[in-house]
Length: 163
Image (cartoon, rainbow, N blue to C red; front, top):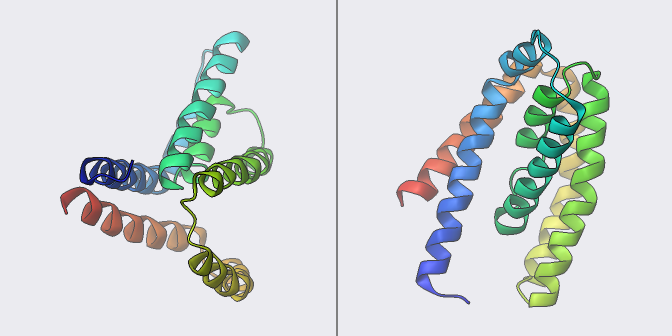
């Protein structure tokens, strides 16, 4: 269903997801500290239910917009699992994001909504981009990278929501 209304809805959801991601990136340290300083430990059943709800929301966001699994997922997991080391949360989120993105991509492929020439161009550009980004990320302060990414996501998100 490629109608103007559906396209606008996806544009709004994408813009909102980018804005939520930007806010999550900017306030991640404060949210992590908030989760770590909670006095009352939530029940295991409640944490499990909230984790599954988070997975469902991320699944919808990734399928509709390709945004959400990274910054939003880690931020929510930091709040739900404050006692876990950050590296375990990040590792778990990446291990979740890869099959989630693969399944969402397969769904779009089956629906015929993949532009193969654009995909190939993105893949060719991504390989050197990953190498350069990996080298730069080890040299730049985390706060700088997080705030640059948040600013970029905010600009794009606002453009999509306001357009």
